[in-house]
Image (cartoon, rainbow, N blue to C red; front, side):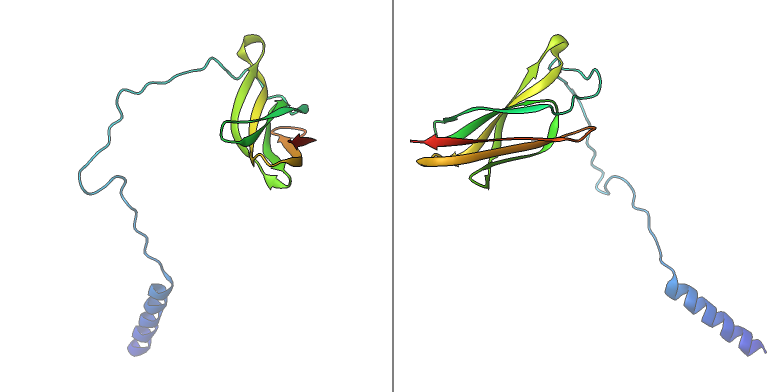
Length: 152
């Protein structure tokens, strides 16, 4: 009887060890005795403050285009409201957001953006630019615009 109890206990312990996992908690920091200290922190503020929910995207206007000093086409887009998931394409190829101006109103509240999209090298011919953005908040509407440009 004692042999059976020992065997059952040994088998139980074997199963417990097989199906258990040992977890080790790592200490924060390092073991080399070095520390990092944060000193002389300075912050700047551009005067723009949040005063309520961001306005939804209400309109998009393609203002024009120009060829920059490197020979790339830059398309200027004016967006009223706050959007994300912006998609800008030149002849079906993705354009790159190069710069953005904040348009402020009363009390330095940002209500619009002027974006500068780099569409790549200027090539003679007619080209199509498309743009869309989705509002960051309700009703999450998508606003779009497109235009044709002729490079000569």
